[in-house]
Length: 148
Image (cartoon, rainbow, N blue to C red; front, side, top):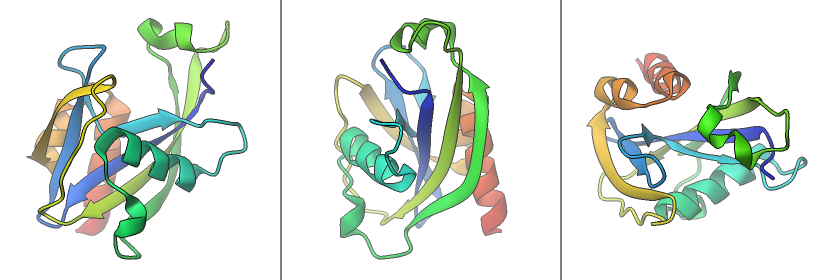
């Protein structure tokens, strides 16, 4: 069973474009990198780095210091009904911790095909609008409002 505590990582290039990945289990559901903790005591930053590597092939440890940041923000949201079977009975809410990752413009993306089928880089406003999850769009907007 999944733990109802997760991370979200907004990945963006130095040119300001944001990475969105399309879920394999739901067509046209675009999102940033997300994932649940593997154990209740897993460090949030380590979980975020693990999810980035698993879902995009990007190894955060190979990037310069300061490119990966804890946005110091968390939200609680209702788990979509189609994914509740992954959690213990009665679990309907999740707590999500937000991170950002700036990557070079020429970074290579290698998707995990069981999780995601496509990716695209979009200007941040378009990316925020395209996300199926309103909170994911909010994370993108918050990141870019802080950068201006």
